[in-house]
Each structure stands twice: as structure tokens, then as C-alpha cells.
Image (cartoon, rainbow, N blue to C red; front, side, top):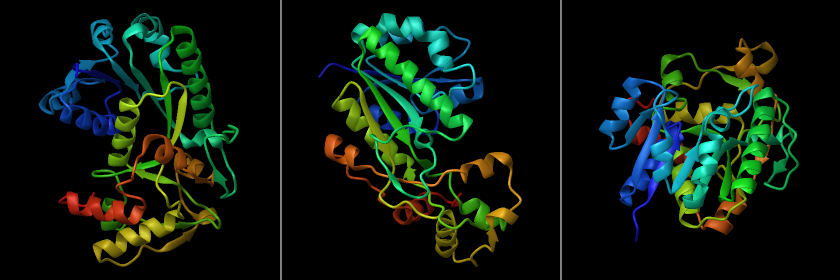
Length: 291
């Protein structure tokens, strides 16, 4: 098998999980980051770092067989397309797979009902609207350039170093109660295996919801984390009375259950962590601090 080169534009939490699986297969992995300190950390993990924006990315694109972008869009659109669209189009003939990390926020609020990849997009937040526009822009470039694009709509991400344990242990956690509110979630290692399964079986134009099997109220997750730690469950606070930042409050503007049938049927993925219960237990086992 010819060697592969994975370039992750925005080599953050989810991309790193994918990158580790690629390294296990002997792939060359290049990742961009915004800081020199993070670049050094990537290098220590065997990733070839590029500080971007800043360093030239053209040579890396020229060697890339698999491209993942996870940079969030803003009011002015997708910054990767704005800065690198022309170079990505030029690299298209040798791109075997392109992945774009989006969000289930593109579906908007469904009052706790189920959504799947065929559900019309109706975001209710600016973040969601920016993602819808970015997805459309990537589809447009893929059609023009002829590379196989794959959209991954991620639910709430957790895993080692990112979860409820540190807040529960600090005593700052609360169980916010908003009747009917449910969220879908996904462990970062399952994101990695979904991306790898897609990279190994490209389906240009495919869209996948990346979430576990058990959408749940947020207060249940906090309670379970406390139970695992063996500490009292945090107090319940009604949503309307909760002191929350505008960003935190905005997440409660949408309630839906997200289906993941397609990643199983099309990619043959079997989730390592089908619910937050298995996922949180694994996080606690894998980390000394349970953070």
C-alpha cells in the first residue's frame, strides 16, 4: 500500500484523535496550529507541525492525500476557504478524501424530536448559520474542483481532559433543569474511528451525523459523573433562574435527538462508547485527575 499523508488544518482535539489512528497505520501526519508552543507539543507527538496562519502551507497541500479541516467559520465565512481555496482546488487531483467537521447545530431546535442527515437545515443560532453557509461553500468548491468531500456533523464532544469531572470535583457544577431538554454527545475516540472509517472508504458527497446512541438531559450526565466520583450530586437549578453566560445559555436554545444510523450502515462503525455512561467511565479510568 502506498503511504498516505493526512493534513489537518486545525489540529485540535478531534483531529488529534484521527491523527493518532493515521499514525498507527504508518501515515504521515501534518497538523496546523496557531502557536509555537502547541507546534512543539505536536512535534513531540510525531506530528509535523505548521504554524498557520503564518507559515506557507502550499508544500504540505501538494503532498496531501487526505485533508481534514476543523476551523470554525465566522460572520465572514470559512477562513480556510478564504485563505486556501485556490490552493486546495489546485491540489484536488491527488486528494483522495476531504473531511469537514461541522456540527449538529445546523438542524436547529426540534423540541426534543429526532433528526437525521435528511432533516432540513434550520439553525437557530449564529454559530449554526455560519456552519450551514460553510458546508455549502465547501460543497461548491468540491463540485468545481472534483474532490470527494465528506461532511461530519458532530454532537457535543467529550473525552480525556474534556468532561464534567473537574467541575463536579470543584463543587461548581450544577444540574440545570429545563424540561424536555436533551443533547446528543460523542466521545472523541469515536470521532477518530468514524473519520478513519470514512477515509478508508471514501463516498464523495456523504454527510454523517457523529453522535452516540443515547441523547440525554444534561442534568443526568452531571449526576452520573458525580456518582462515578462518589460525591454528592450537584444541586438542581431551574434554567430560568440559572446564572449562565450568554454562550452557555445559547446551547439550551436547541433540543433534539440525533440519529447516527448512517455511520453504522455505510461505514460499519461500532461505537466504542454508545452512551455517556461507558464514555465517562472510560474517561475516569484513563485520566489521573478525572478532568
